[in-house]
Length: 68
Picture 1 (cartoon, one colour):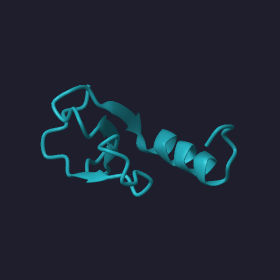
Picture 2 (cartoon, rainbow, N blue to C red; picture 1 turned 180 degrees about the horizontal axis):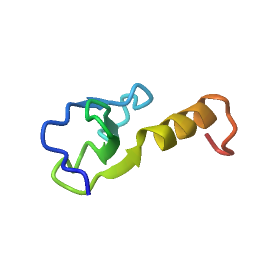
Picture 3 (cartoon, rainbow, N blue to C red; picture 1 turned 60 degrees about the horizontal axis):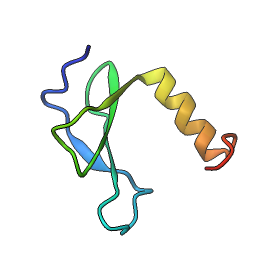
Picture 4 (spheres, rainbow, N blue to C red; picture 1 turned 135 degrees about the horizontal axis):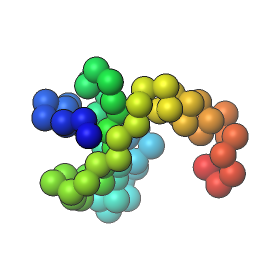
């Protein structure tokens, strides 16, 4: 499992002012993109390889995923 020490987290641009229910993303690590719940920064984080993350975000942006 990739160590997330040194990750620089940022709030997702899609997380509005919704009472703290936000997603944070770290894209500063060399081989992984990490996603976590901003309310539980010490909790688990999802880890994606860069190509999977790029496919996922492209699908979301193109509305290829139902419900997004």
